[in-house]
Length: 221
Image (cartoon, rainbow, N blue to C red; front, side):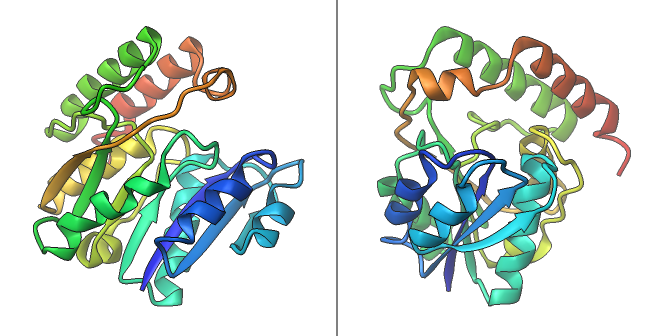
């Protein structure tokens, strides 16, 4: 069974369309409402998602792990993660599923830089820094390590164990892949940037904090 997990925090204006589009390719869609103060949970449920709610905002890493654990209990064999703000195109899901279906990979990373996407310079800069930090922390290069659009096959779904609550969980996943020797595939994907998605992204200060957390905690496990 294919389950899509969408971590969401105050995405009431966007998440319903993401849910509706993801339902075209997944057997079930699970939204983790990460302590939202708007109607994220209600509109997600109306759009057809199963909703799990965090009482308080715990961070995207914690929300993703909550979704993974719930999907396991639901009997998922394949798991898709994507952002709630609409920047990922769910129509790319079949492309990311293909390496799993053909038994060529245990985990698939979307690569926003593998197509001619119009990506702002600041995003390219932050992503490049994130890739380098991920290489230092995990010992493995992934071209778009900070992207939330991924597909987990049965092996990676069963073994993944995230302990970092914030944005650094993306680097943690790469480290898990390296340590557990998961087969990796990277698939070019579309990205849709807008003023909204740019405004909600990490600030420079938060990016520095994330980088420090990655470096300080990467060798604690």
